[in-house]
Length: 532
Ligand SMILES: [Zn+2]
Image (cartoon, rainbow, N blue to C red; front, side, top):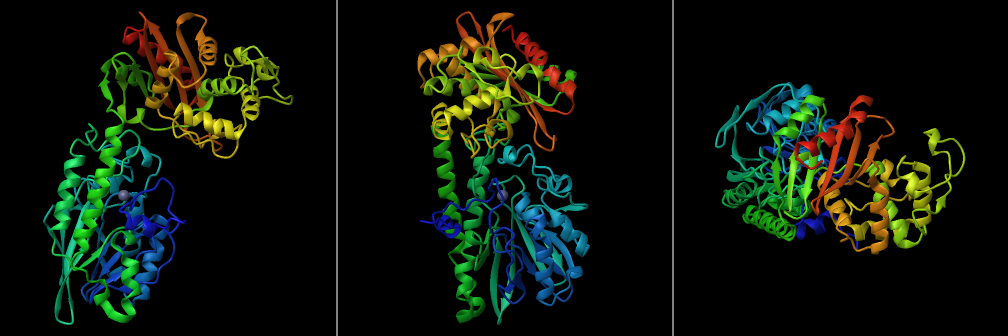
């Protein structure tokens, strides 16, 4: 069965922000009237509503930056001037609803108005740290909006005869905004509602059930759901049109006229779906125990002094406590690069792709990035100099099917091996967070992975450091094709007094000096904690 967005909407699973651009986000859509003065001017997948008057217009939402010109064209198609848009409002500060606002402001000269929580995001184009989807939107900047005025909860924004009221509905984001106004259809008063996304969707390690980045997330969603359910509501439009059954209603328009959009139960139904989504999110979170995290000021200071932007986490396996610097970043997944040599070795040994860490594997001939890689060697040596060609050979011997199965059994990051068996850990799509790294390494150190014990013992043996027998470690350095946004890693564990402390450091590599700082910085952090 092909699962359409409509089927997902019916199941109450309307997502508001998928990691990849959804298919229909920028699909063109003819504009149409919703009521006497309100028009749908968005794309097929993203809503935008124009409320028009002779004294100027109000526009709600700007979709993506790519869709902004379509919205402007739709306004013109209806016979209005884009320059007559006086005010632009926003449902919430995510790129699928606010990404096009900067361009629409440029085209119209309109004033942009938003809540005090959304305004800084619109002004900077950068996702807020307290956004439940912070981890997923970190590298997805929006075009910054020049001037953003502030609207308060309950305030009415006016243009000529138009009056649109803000009902703050935070929870999906902290700036979440629902807008209401009344239209007149043949003498009948119609309550119009542009309700924000109310879905509890988190990325990275964010938890609606309690997270220091946004402690009120759950109660905000609950309050916002109740607020929307109680609104006088005849015509509902949601930021993702399928979320309010817009296309089913539109199909009835030829027969019913604007009445096709009227449904007095629409807001309550919408709220019910959001409530079900919240329950689903909370149930999923209940299955994974919450992380006990302790920020460490000494480690923060070490990063500060080194001028390095990154995270460091130590997982005290016995106490089940995470200590470190930048909890949010510790939950963000990055390409593991050569830290993947640890699981690659394990899967290779477990599947018999290589018989032991002393079996010599060919590097394949030809030029190598580092001259010392140009020699056939066993994993024992290859891991020490991070020999990429030898580990690529190992991956090819494992093969895609066994590799995928291995990733699943290890529960390793996003477990996504993509389609190229000897590059997925170097170029992606495989990604893992620092927190996931330490969980994986903690299990390896304790012999607790669902893998043959001799394989685990052999892998522990080859990552043990010569200069310190209690330290097990591996570096990694992710270099994308465009060489921008490089990430450096240092991961491993320390054994001290019979206990295991798994650690992971990752950092933005802005220049080569940062690459050289990874290990000393990680060691300094371990020393600061008294582990080294
Ligand atoms: Zn969103």
